[in-house]
Amino acid sequence: MAVPLLDLKAQFAPIEGDIRAAMDRVLASQHFIMGPEVEGLEHEVAAYCGARHGIGVSSGTDALLVALMALGIGLGDEVVTTPYSFFATAGAIVRLGATPVFVDIDPDTYNIDPTLIEAAITPATKAILPVHLFGQCADMVAIRAIAARHGLPVIEDAAQAIGSEDAGGGRAGTLGTMACFSFFPSKNLGGFGDGGMVVTNDDALAERLRVLRVHGSKPKYHHAVVGGNFRLDALQAAVLRVKLTQLDAWTAGRQRNAGVYDQAFAGISSDLLSTPAVRQPRHIFNQYVVRTPRRDALMAHLRQAGIGCEVYYPGPLHLQPCFADLGYGAGGLPQAEAAARETVALPIYPELTATQLAEVVVAVTDFFRS
Ligand SMILES: *Cc1c(COP(=O)(O)O)cnc(C)c1O
Image 1 (tube, helix red, strand yellow):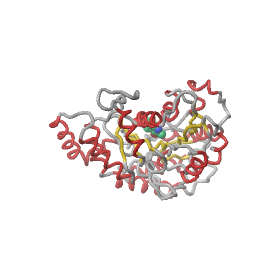
Image 2 (cartoon, protein in one colour):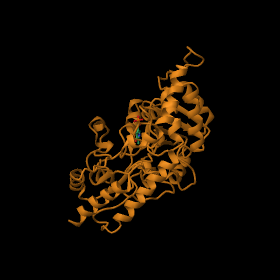
Image 3 (cartoon, protein in one colour):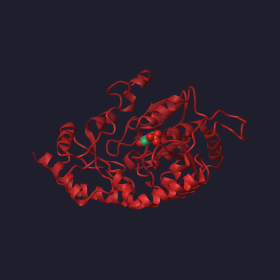
Image 4 (tube, protein in one colour):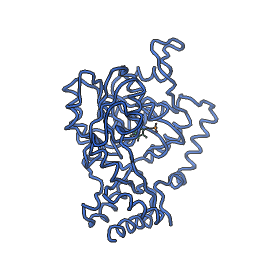
């Protein structure tokens, strides 16, 4: 039996009735953009994070873009961020004319290394943008202390991390100035299309985000600032409200599966395979990423066995062709480059059966025995 990397049909089956009812509610209303479903989701996600405001937007990418816009970041500004993330993290910075300043990662967690941040701060730095990669918070206690020393805002890229918590006792969404979530279907809380949200405790920023989301229009047809169409659909919000009620149970399932793998792989020498280093109190395992110098051979073996696996991410951001003019070369950020060569994600979704988990375990352990 094949084990896919993710099985959204298995997630959908038990909630299909509730989702169809929620979508029917929207169809009956014929209210498709923003409105009460979006407002309901905004309140529920903000409450889930323990934050005051949620601003529903069109994607996680647009959440990053509009958060940077709300801080007025643009031409000549620098934003300190990680080279080891999905493209949108750096893409949003560059789209505004600003410059991403990449700081290498902690090789254990794959998150930005806070001990390297301060050396990257210049008079042009306008924000720090850490990513909570794979569902584990970056070291926000350290990052907040640095930001406070330099008077800088912090934007959390929490696209993979809804419900994750940091050592300071807070939840993603409350660990910086603003946090950006994605509802892309493969995230832990995924819609039936694109969607995202910015969460913040700052009343003034929340107001600015709401205005920027609708072309800067306030009052209607009066534009003091230029925004964009960053609106969220009611159908997405209706689906997401149903799924949010399941999120904690799904997270528990991911954590349980991670525990099964951790235990099963504990006997493999750490020179050959390392399991995820959990350094924060609540890792939500959007991905379960292992590291091995024999990564490509392991992937070939898993694929042969019908087991889904994927590399997140095969090319670090500082080496992307579109950022060549930033002047980073190969070897410039060695930890990110090594992670891109040596890591692979295994199936971790909560609906995995015991049989499927056992198949993955057998395939991995067999590979390292050979
Ligand atoms: C998914 C993701 C995004 C972008 O979200 P979209 O909703 O796909 O636009 C941004 N950053 C990270 C770290 C992500 O994983």
